[in-house]
Image (cartoon, rainbow, N blue to C red; front, side, top):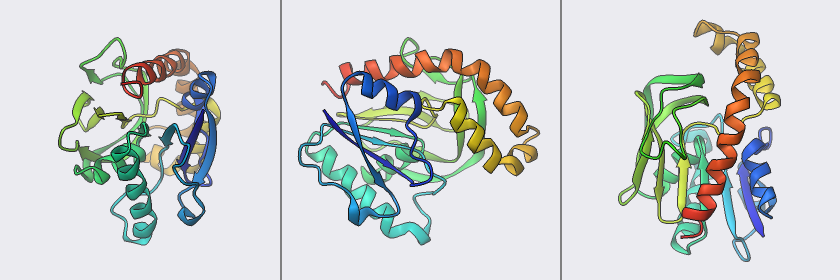
Length: 224
């Protein structure tokens, strides 16, 4: 089965989420956000996965690139191609399908255990990795499935599903993010070293939780 992976060229690791999709027989074609003119068509595509990004959907400097992603999402949604979005992917789905995206009243960065879920057997309270400063309102017709004190954390609409948190993250990814975001972590009273230490413990739960989330998604959302 063929899947498109929409990601920035310098951050295209789908981590635990990608591993689980591959376990179910999917192969990924990478489509980099910086070059939408090079993306594959949707012909023969069985799945789209949208990863996170340092971008915000409302940044004018990437408006044309974001518009291409939103158009892809709308086309996939209209034609029943399943879409799984993470963080920026969650935000781009909302923007594409009639919801909104705006700066959150606070950023969420680090490992969190405070998600309130309507499906706790699928989306437990945590630990889930968060790294975002934006929040969505869900599109018309969508069902919000989980939330935190700061933002909507998961929703579905048709065969499209999105999480604001990062179920895909592995230790290698966090090592890179922590180094790139060291100043941000220090400003929040944390550090790259502390985040890596927390990650080595948290992934023991987040990995099987991420796998179970993909299993549920394929059975109950993409398969609906």
